Image (cartoon, rainbow, N blue to C red; front, side):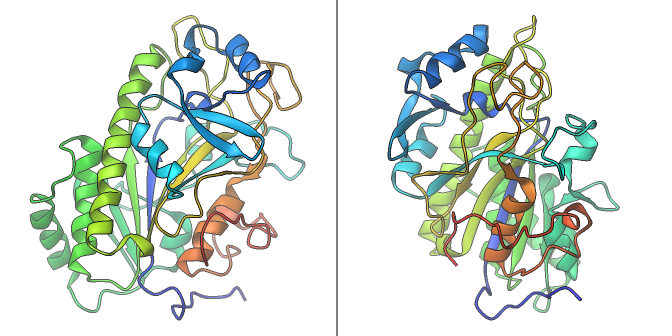
Length: 342
């Protein structure tokens, strides 16, 4: 029998998943700045290359520097304040660590729980929850109990409070305003929010589309984190990104990219051991040791089960064996990464 949730040491902890729908091209989210790694990136990126001079430098490892996308300036600053971590090369890993035949398929790679009304939920949180609610703007909430507020009353209260939120008036800002309102109401001991953020299917004109998306992501997350700190909640809330897959380093003829495999994720919060890159960053050499398709499709060095296990363990879950999406990932809890305080 799998272990169940224990609320002793982790009560009041919250996770907020920002799900980048469509498959985020993380090749331009965080870029190595040192040669020869940057030179390999530039050769493969072609028309989608970001010049070294516009990238926002950070120390990724003791011996290597990296650059954030120029529209992620606020998150770069939080990285330098140790509140943001990068988890490198995350993806669904086959048992033999080879690319599976369905890699790049949105429905299979999402590995989310589907709710009856069309909303999505974090699978490991929904599996343990007694309550999964659909809130405003597509946000879903999984929680272990609802003792203090009736479900329908909570949804109405959140909607009313969200209208007064002071986060950016953008799609993502309004969604995070809904999350902030639910947290301020304090109706649950624990929360797990799924926040869908669409637009990352960048088959064409990726440079301009992604610049706008990253700008919206940066503004909303920075203001959300600031609001959590002002409320004294930031130690108990961890925000993280997820997506179906990354995209090819090599662009197509329309200035976009195709579906790929492993990509990088961001983790934000006062409990985050930030200011560093976790996992192994891939070689960005097209046709190199980490390229499984000859077009900049990187084999993941970190399984999404390890990534999920690290977040789930911090939240209070001690086993993923009862979650269908991760049931075959033996040892995920034992091999979890160290980007969160326990």
